[in-house]
Length: 476
Image (tube, rainbow, N blue to C red; front, side, top):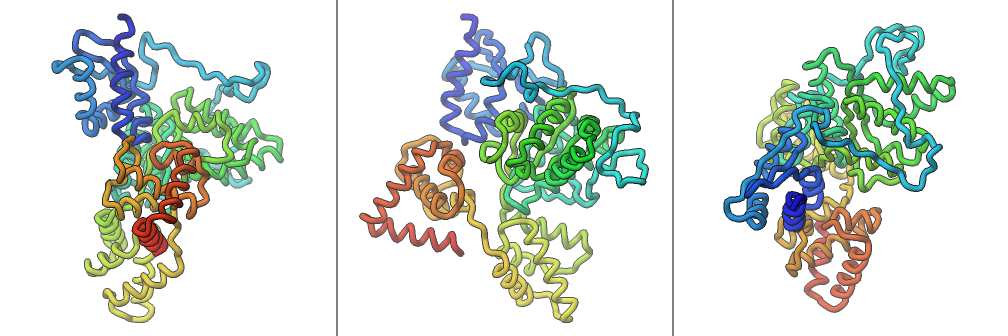
């Protein structure tokens, strides 16, 4: 059977898909290519050494169980690791087709113009007219480096991928590296840290950080001044391009079109793209599908709110780097009460120091609570689907990952339905977006869940009280 390796791997995937979160399956299993089966050994191709190491560390149990089921108790797994950015010998490059488009339409044809780095005629949109600059300023903040970035469970995958990219820009499977999170959780810091690390290791490489709004404004200005080609050529020269807040491209059709061509050129020539957003690609609205499909080519890494230990580490690093002297119990008070994001944590420290200095008061828990009370009142907690899932799972005493697993267990099904109910009523997310984040379901499943919860509220007093209790926790 010539395609036995495909048959075996497909059977393994059917089991794995039902036992890991959908986002983990898409990230770590869909890119794998089965190559051959030789007796009891299945050989698979993985995109990088980091990819192989992560599989071995996180998923070796489920891999071994499913493989033994298919090939017997002596089954073995071998990895064929792609060490370079180039395609492996014998593997044909795939072609992206865009159905429904005319052959004569140029929008989907990648722009690949030869660039001479010494060409002084190309205008740098970051240079003030009248001021000559020989080198492109990467627009990076020196403080936003890996040394100042605190690792925790909330960001470990993103940070590890960032280090891999910084060690081999354009030469890993993480191209583009798509970082997403709510505001204030460090995605901009991490993106800039990658850029700084690349400049340290590869001084000859051209690195550029730019937020999406500035990119759009530069494009509009280039159009107004009839030098769009200069704009295009400038960005095609970059070795590592970091675009912050790509969700701001939404609704800007011409900006998306020019970025599509820049993306294609950089990706095809082995250059690295790093993108940040407040949402994963699947949830971005107002974006062209051809661009969204490219955002999914590499790795999409989620960055969550830091846990208590990580919050303490962040505060201690900030105190140490700024030369502050703050008792540890005060830091714990701040970490307990401010949980949403890193920006608020650092803001609390600055406010505490200001209050102490200006009013000549000792830094203690009493002063810390006063500062925290003001911050909490002025920063109303934003309710997100992620927060809702955490609160619901805490209430029902289950792990949040269980909401993503395909199962008919009553307690998990009910918790998932409750999470969908609150997400529909307390966020502006679409039904499709809610379903994709909670168990990978469709909009019809979300509608059914909301009807089920409403019926139970009307008929079951204990259930109604549970809903009220959860609602109170969400509004705290």
